[in-house]
Image (cartoon, rainbow, N blue to C red; front, side, top):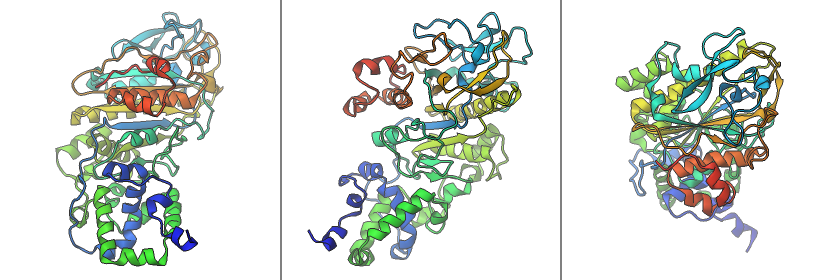
Length: 488
């Protein structure tokens, strides 16, 4: 084959993907959403103003349960929010390095939530106000209004124990690539993120990377993503690099083919199949992807839940609320939220308590949003590393330094019809050294721990077959140990 002939190969081949034949395969390659909101702007004159005909199930999205990741950058002490257990499900000998003192019933009371999950409740002795677990405080009352969040009664909670690198964006905790590979799609928007990384959060992907996420800086970016004129400015650096590579591979004859009538139709079909609506949708402002601009009861309730003014387009709560809405409604595929400031070992307890409550508040607001929309949602809370306290018999000792061996991740599964069934609330456990126990397979493996989280998501969606086919989360024996969430 001549060099010229090699340059003529299709875009999907140039991007090292097998030839896609269905809408789902086009979306899974990452070519379609990228092409629609990256190459599309340069071809707007070809598309003109004609309405594109739907040819491949435009706007349907997927039937998978909405998936939202909340990443806490800096290594918070997620273990100190709970009464962590050993591999047998019993209490460990001491909790002093976890900032909880001697242990439950001695330095703090046990507070139960999500059915029978044990959290760090009120302190016994020392100087504590309210619950020791500020994460639980935030989930229960997301706007600090002293009213309990009823969505918690319809949610299940699972924790995983895993050692991870401190203050690092190289932990492979992101699983959105697997979620998308399994078939998750958005009806209008692709996978959304908050930071300019390959995953949209401060974590590396596990097993398979997601398509370059659309980075949301403010609420207006969501509706702008559907238009061609503003798409280039909203692209991440990774998307711009990918676009340059694709364009550089186009030969003169390929460009002429795109400009021909048949090429115009090909691009039109691609845009349709990407679920990026036509000129009519762009002219209408993108439908409901900008929920705070709807001017109806949805706008009002979302503004209340997230504690913002309906005219707010730039605050973190407005952006998070709008992204979460699009994920839960199925407008977007996966949602990756990122919170910084969790490297809080400053010799006090105050900073950590504030940050932990803020993270719990975000989770509480996600649950409230799902409850209002009457939709299920899977929430994955991940973090890079952990921290250690000065050793004290009381549950108020300050955070002193990093300690990634005490790392942890959370799974929260919500269903509007009632709390999802679980076979247990822990994956792995802690040893008497107050660290993730490496005797359990995921204890020292962030990659395998992330796969364990995905295994629960797949199982809840009745897709254990996907795990088996792709050899994920170990062998059948390990999968049986890590899957706690039964099918929805």
